[in-house]
Length: 239
Image (cartoon, rainbow, N blue to C red; front, side):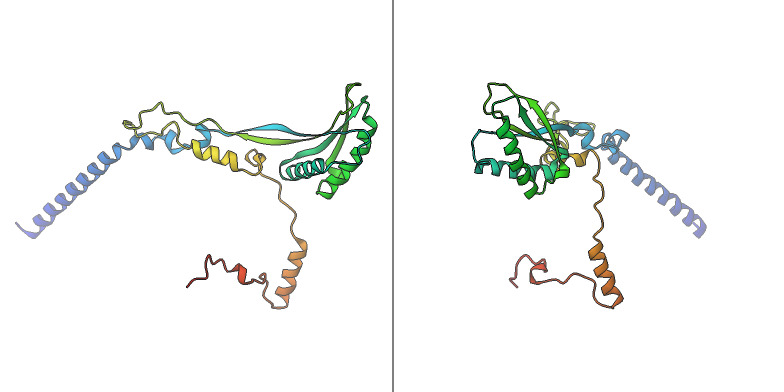
């Protein structure tokens, strides 16, 4: 056999070997073909286990007793917590509803001033407030002031669908519970469920910090914030 014939035979053998390797690879991937279909390639847990975001109204009733000197310590603590919740998750105005037609309507007006001042001390200013009266019973001597605001609540789908035989799945598909726990965790941990509906507006730039950095840059000084010993990021000082 001359050299030309040997090279031709070797080339044919190499092509047969490559063909065999490709066949083996295709056979192996065939077992995973169920997971590589278009619907699985585009799978997202938010389709199978969506988080529904619904509007809800948070309310707080403040009892008003005629002759009571100001707000009680318990009421003050409740209003402070309510103001913090409004700053974190409130949307729209915080509405204060005052009773009308009840024996304590005059005391409610006095209490309204105290409530407004306390809200202002806790970061809820006059521009965040709205007022509305409500018709109370003429026999209700303890008709409350009602504080309310709109918020969003995340409600995940229920997990626990074990209808599929996990020990036998020829298509190598996704299980009914796939991604459900993650979606439930997101719904429970999200600080403001409104973020799942639409992104927040950008906050204004820090003009004062920007000016400081530019002044240091023009002077040839370091523009980074000074770091202390607590900013090392080290978990432990053991060496």
